[in-house]
Length: 79
Ligand code: HEM
Image (cartoon, rainbow, N blue to C red):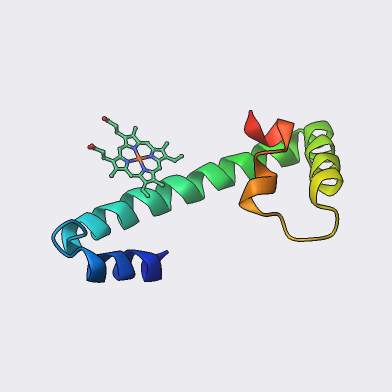
């Protein structure tokens, strides 16, 4: 992520200023980790939904790694 932002800054320094990248990094990290923490906590407290989501992921990606394209094919995760 930082690598991508820095390469964008090299291409368009007037758009991707240091301050802009810092704000994006700060605004994006805590919100994302809190969201993940809540999602995991809710899944652990609702095992029937966890098993449904697991079954759906196995059906779409099998034993491979989940790609972004496949993520959008999973009905539960979209909600
Ligand atoms: C679940 C994740 C997130 C939540 C709940 C969330 C929530 C919010 C909220 C409530 C605001 C204020 C909107 C307003 O008052 O107008 C905001 C603004 C903002 N968020 Fe997020 N955010 C999330 C993820 C992110 C991520 C991943 C990024 C960047 C990579 C980001 C960047 C920003 C920025 C730059 C602003 C300021 C926008 C502006 O003032 O024009 N946020 N976010």
